[in-house]
Length: 180
Image 1: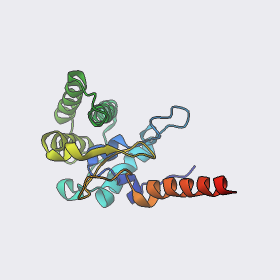
Image 2: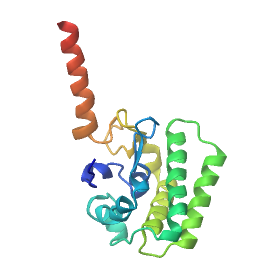
Image 3: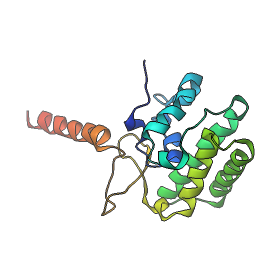
């Protein structure tokens, strides 16, 4: 299956969430796909982030994660997902926060200023220290994390054009089958 990093893949609203969302269908182990398992995809991510990430003005040009930092970077990705997912679902605990802070600290020690690792760590810190964290949601279709920037905080899909359309089309299809 061919894959490209498109604007939809950066629907999270923050680089840290976009990195966490690099695992497709995380909640379904049988269909889950880790885009960073392919080194080429992981190396292509920073260039796409420069074009599509909501935070691109904050970090500018990014270098791919260095080979020796990749395992720590994946650990950071998983800590970001675990903490913010638990926070949205109202069952965060001190271990989740401690794990995230430890993963961030590891990246800040290892990364260089223009690296994907450093930018992701800074993005996660911004989410922790900002009121934006209260607006993080889990997409009702794909399970991705995203920031709800709607005025009344009622957004339920990461991307209306993709996930919202799929849910509405499925609902329309089921209602047509029920009438027939």
